[in-house]
Amino acid sequence: MWYTDLEKANSYPKFSLSTRLIKTAGKTLCPKNIAQLKPEEVVLEIRIGTEFFFKYDEITSEKSVAGITTSHALEALQLVFEHELCHVIEFMLFKTSNCSQPRFKTLAHNLFGHTESTHQLPTPRKIAQEKYGLKIGDQVSFNFENQRLEGTLYKNQQAGHHNGEG
Image 1 (cartoon, rainbow, N blue to C red):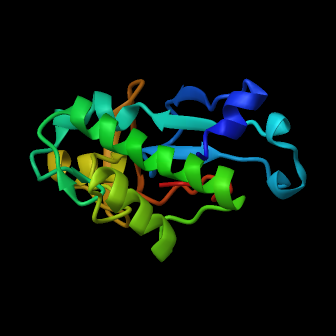
Image 2 (cartoon, rainbow, N blue to C red):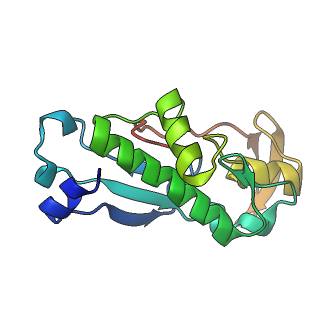
């Protein structure tokens, strides 16, 4: 099986939590040179974006992960973790992973019944729009430290790379 390389190498995926993931609920980190590494040298990491689950109940709209409607944060977390495990399997077997490709979709569906590769969980943008009616481009004003501030909401893009995100 695919996990025998992990067992032989005594190397299992690492797991971490992140407050910095704000668009993707999970991410699998893999060395770019995985194809040149021996199995015992490969270190994969599943990173979970915690804010999606801590703020799960801040929006009332339907929340789904991988095409499955969720009823609570723990269920959503499980589905995100399953999705990331599919990335781990693909990386170990094929040295690459892409959740928009048929191979990944087939794997995720056969193992876990997933029908999509995206989530509809509460992002900061969705929370701002649903709770406060705010969206990118809106003019805003507010008081901060006894000073009136005015401006335009804009998209804050973080630099990063797409490596098994999902």
